[in-house]
Image: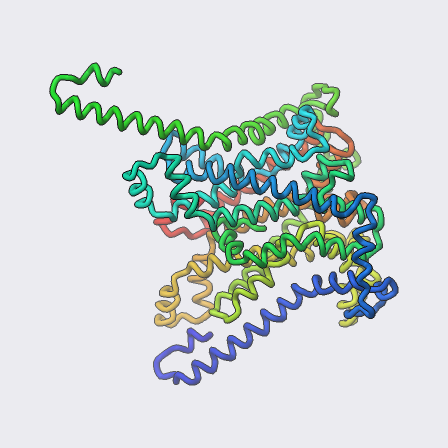
Amino acid sequence: MSGAAIGIGSSGASVRRSQKTQAVLIHVVLIAGGIIVMIPLAWMLSTSLKPPHQITKFPPIWIPDPFVWSNYVRAVTIFPVSFLVFVRNSMYMSLMITLGTVLSNAVVAFAFARLSFRGSRVLFIIVLSTMMLPQQVTMIPLFILFSHFGWINTYNPLIVPHFFANAYFVFLLRQFYTTIPRELDDAARIDGCGVIGLFLRILLPLSKPALGITAIFAFTWAWNEFLGPLIYLSRMETFPLAIALSFLRAAHGVLWSELMVVSFIAMLPPVLLFFVAQKHYIQGIVITGVKG
Amino acid sequence: MSAQAQSGRTPLSRFFSSSVWSRRTLRQKEELIAYLLVSPWVIGFLAFILGPMLTSLGLSFTETDLFTLEFVGFENYTKLLSFDTTRTLFWTTLYNTAYYVFLSIPLTITAGFFIATLLNQNISGQPTYRVVYYLPAVIPGIATSLLWLWLFQPEFGLINWALSLVGIEGPRWLFDRSTAKMALVLMSVWGAGSNMLIFLAGLQGIPTELYEAATIDGAGIWRRFRSITIPMISPTLFFVVVTQIIWSSQVFTNVYVMTEGKGGPANATLMMVLYLYQVAFRQYRMGYASAYAWIFFLILLVFTLLLFRSSKAWVYYETEIGGQRS
């Protein structure tokens, strides 16, 4: 609209005015949309702090009266196992997966970005095509394999595969490495750096932002992972938070305050991580088109 | 060795050949290191992708429960694809998944694209809006599912309250087989923020000179949108459509949590991956499940290939970047 108004003869003031009304209009639409997006979360917080009789009020009450903070205590003590055990399990699993993801992908992506070797093109095409593969087609043989290893009810089936690189992160990191000028490689080579030295001393320190993105994504996905833990873990002491929550839903389906409390707690780590690192986060999505 | 044997006539040729030799060994050494560095991925690919895929194909011709294994030929496939719907749930799950995918994708893409277009108008506060709209995408599926279960609650849920404000008596959503799938679709729109980010990146990559030139030529807003924005964004759109089909057809956590792993009411939300999970890990019919997984995979593969073929007709690539896209 504004662009079309720019033409011969139209006065600057009227253009500016029409641009202003347009901007206001856009803000109105965006804010309305933003409110719709945020309402469910506000409702979650509100429910988590309500006394029981206010939960089933219709029309709904938005501000709990009084704020029942003890809901939080009750919700985390409702499990037969300490809630902290689930948090610890989720943390352990997510951190190990993050470690494996960063280590393996940093190395593999470096080879694809900087080294020439026979078959590298074909291999890279295979890497990319595995992105399209639904994990369900490998799920059953992997379960059989890991159960032969005696890995059921351990975190190994969930952690170990992440130490062997992953197409998304190879792609993400390779894209990032290729933005680092090759002149730096040459300079390092002249100074007597070998391939490994080039990787450790030049590329790795320069790609901290991309490694950060990789770590954040890996952690978030691991934290949110559901199907894998559901298949491999059946003892409550081994449950990560996500599975413990689904257990709570099955056992006490209508305790809405408690369900909202634990949902809120479960979403805190990835949400906080997103807020802290949102710039990197968004950059990572833009590079790969991967959703979080 | 052979290079050294060939040389040795003049100092010049000796120098030349030795330098070639040393360069070659350096190359070879580097190549060896390169193979060593990609080996984690190669091992992972063989052990966790290719090997299991082929095993899964083999298992699909057997019936196995981890302890016994019996070869059954094509029986799993004929049973699955039988048109006698009392014998197979395949068609139900296919219909449910297709319903979900083909309703949720247009909605999430339209919503994402619309917001991205607005944000692309040099709006102040863009970072804040991006965070707000993207936030639902980082929330764990389990928390999202529990939250929406509560929102869709027929008697006290927020959604039916909102509907009652405009005089509509809300349906029973997840408890009614005619609205249960729609509830899942509506819920998926909440996560449209991830599409928005990708579209926004695509829109910001369109050179402004194109718009300026078109404006000078007298193109109006609609004309510019149709002749510049649409073709220039089509590669992004293509990418989003392909990845969305693959991801959303694997919908699992939501249905598992919201229907307590059953896919009810009356199988109305029994999605393909949920059924696969039930058959493999509740009933331990691993052979049947493998056949099912392969059919699922092949359907996705055919769909993706069709999309890639059709892309020639509607995706616009600038010639220089044509080879670079992946």
